[in-house]
Image (cartoon, rainbow, N blue to C red; front, side, top):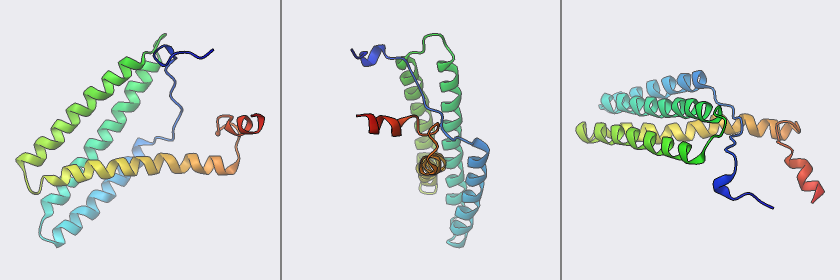
Length: 151
């Protein structure tokens, strides 16, 4: 018998999330974007791009903290995690759009920075996981290899 989704325990897999590495990447990307934008005569686009990367990093750190706090509870609820995520994303989106609107057109760099951060986050978390899976480490694969052969 399967458990209905709303009654299932809240489980999050461990991921290779390294905020300091992401901060370093954001600093390098901000420098490159500012340099490129400066050469084109729009330095502030690069600065706002860095602000967008910073907002993305802030979101990622807040996600990690909320997941840690919610999963530490005796009975973590998916609803609580969903509400937390929706609220956080709403606030950060409003901040990003407000900056983009007030400082348009250069402020649009914030939105590009926030979008690029998501790509960087996926790449920096997916690559270490893929490397472990390719190495054939059964602990890191979560037992998926054994399930495929037993079916």
